[in-house]
Length: 109
Length: 113
Image 1 (cartoon, rainbow over the protein chains, first blue to last red):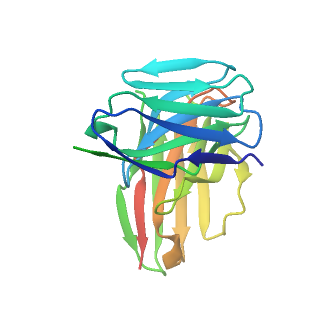
Image 2: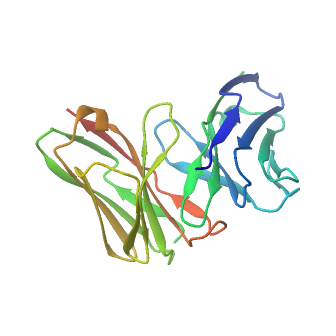
């Protein structure tokens, strides 16, 4: 089965600072999803990557999938309190989506 | 409509009760999913329905019984649950495949007393 390890597990950054979250897979990634979750709420879709070397951006969030398709990174530029939450990467197979261990982000003023 | 709607948002039930969680989508997605999420853990897959047929059961105890009445609806029937079953239950739908996109509902917060 595919395992996804995220790092760091938790992160506290000052507002305005940049940060990066990593997602490393035990197998090749063919569809890699990034979601954000506020505590106790549903998952908000951020981005999906499928091609090696692919990079996508939305507002201040950029996600990349490395050439070997076994690692993805999520970068937030000039963090804001609204970025706080839990970030989850997910690997898609033909039949299901399996999640990484999660990264909890806090943004301080 | 690009949403997955889950009801109820919160549910408290006794260990001898029978209750149901409901999930609805109108995006024409062919696959629907139930996930269970404990505190500070990622969501874990429970069941997958593809074209209204159960395709994956991740060894879930029989006190959880899924049902897919039609392509837009997914239910999770609960009976004789244990306190450790308290969790956030998430429903999702997708077009299927690796890049079909997964849309999640806002979840049902279940507490078993």
